[in-house]
Image (cartoon, rainbow, N blue to C red; front, side):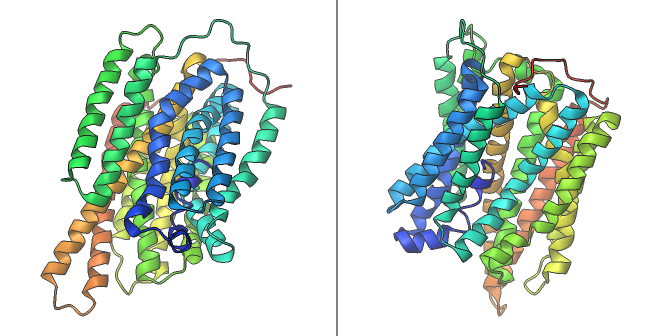
Length: 463
């Protein structure tokens, strides 16, 4: 639900714009509001789960997400819809790390843990594509408002199941106080970074707001690290990221987020604006990739990881993802889906299937039970920040390549379409470079040895 909502409204935006009557310039805030609140509050959400109990925070996140979605579905103005999206992001910041930390602390036997993370990895890798499919189907067959209402059908039964199946959180005892200086510097720093990258996508890297946001983000994150070294009860204990393999897992998630979200954006543009696919058909075009991710993720996590370790799986997945990007660079104005898009999607499905579950499992393996929430939040933060960087960077590079092509090929009959496709190909080329860099980082940071069984912890499911 959390990953799905990062993309489900994308296809519904034109219908929502026509219904509510807002401008093209305002349209981006429906996307940005979710990203800003989600990205900036993740570390706080993860720590709240560690302090107040993951079941409480998980159910609270579900209830709040459902209420915010209902508010968005009934929105009668742009302001209400943007506010609802911001609330969705805030409650997602509670929900996402609580979900992953529950997984981390529940499945402690190696075989069960690998199976659980294979399922979770498949969901993480395919959620964005599923959002495009579901968004297209709901918008085309029902109404754009159902891209918001559908979350109630997911959140309500999940909350009921959580109340029944998850054991009661431990009593509070002496709770560690929330690190307020760390919370303020981390949240404001992440907010500034996400805003800076989002502004770069719409207004360019030379914009004063872009530069100010990125500079403030870097300065505040630096201040956050300095604070965490000194406070008694840090929001993010630096021991969580000091472990080399764990840091490699976090970095791998960020890199794959940078490449993946940008590519979904440009493939969607290409399918709809160049090949003329409808929103629903555009979403369904990603189904082959999802069909490959599922079995590959299961085999990689349950069969290969215990034998070869995370290094070859994640590094190999990055290489395959880079190869898929290179296949996408062959798109033309008159290409067919079967020859220009489908092969790349199948290869990308194999690559992402090998990466996601393995990187998430490595990033959370061996973390102290009291730090499971904030470690899980870092996984989501990496994916969110990576996605923001990738979308902004690739959008800028694509626009620059398209503009250069158009200015130097003014006599071409269909110059607008040709320049757009040239821009997409440039974005795919740079995405291949991002994945190639990710393969090198994964090879250097991730362990080659197969992981040992995780230490036994008290399970969180009631017997």
